[in-house]
Amino acid sequence: MRSSRFDRGERNISGCGLSGMMSLTGERVDGTAIRESIAILHDRSNGLGGGFAAYGIYPEREEHFALHVMYESPSSQKAAEELIERDFDIDLDERIPTRPNRSISDPPLLMRYFVLPRGLRLHELGVSAEDYVLGSVMRINADVTGAYVFSSGKNMGAFKAVGYAEDVADFFRLEEYEAYIWIAHGRFPTNTPGWWAGAHPFTLLDWAVVHNGEISSYGINKRYLEMFDYRCTMRTDTEVMAYLLDLLIRRHELPVEVACDVMAAPFWEQIERLPEKKRLLHTALRQVYGSALVNGPFAIVFGRQGEMVGINDRIKLRPLVAARRASWLYLSSEEAAIRAMCPDPDLVWTPRAGRPVIGRLGSDVVIGQPESIGEEAVVPAFAPGGGQ
Image (cartoon, rainbow, N blue to C red; front, top):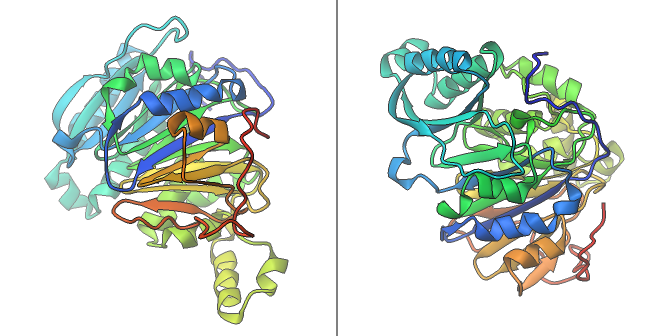
């Protein structure tokens, strides 16, 4: 395991707060509302990590992969840029704009590169553009000391640091970006370090994941992913979530709902009580993808182009609240944070354990949204304190 001057080494009991908002019609808004939402959850974090993912922020270069990279030193920048220049045609490279913030100390050099895979190398390797980018990201993060690609999707970007989330938003000037999906996280680490690349969200290509909880199956998940050439280098358990989503949905072409059934699978006793077709499906998924089951308490919100999803573990050991207002979908750890984004939602509900809430661009139907209040959902009382 590589050390880093950004690794402070603290260990704390878990808290973590997360929020997400999505326009189902593609309307883009700046980062003000999501900043206010995650600021409400300030006491869920301890200043050891905050971050955001935003979709639709680079429409002028929407066909380019946007590599966000942090460097600990000039030598790490030189080594990583040699690989980037070898693998990609670079349309633009620049520093990621920031402003000084008293709460964000000792930042690394933060760069972004808008790139396309080199056609000849792509042809020689015979892989998709996405797998080509995946391989390049894995090489830089694993082999170049002090260089970390923390975002690599098209028309999206991640912004994260050691600090409270609202300070991270100010540091990265998120009010200057407009996105149709915003996802935010305030971190309270448990047994992993608080350092810049270890803050949430964790990303790969256009996947971005924020997480509250702990993944006790991390070792099994990590070894399983290594069979498919994913390399876990960020020293935080949440990293496996981003890679599992890419493997299951993009590479294995499972529907999002089925991938969620893999990661938050029903217990065997529940499977045995299902109707025959569903029982056979879930049995096959457990047999084929047993090592992709994510164990432990978790609530996650993840995004990709055109989609935002929230899901709990299969016994709901971490809080997750959802809400709708017209064409907007909201997700958060607490209703109070949703009301910071949307003071008067049409519907607020608590998703069921292990069942996803899915919003898709161009669709007014949100999977997991109850038609009426009943056994499918609970409308919580407005409680700023929330629950763990």
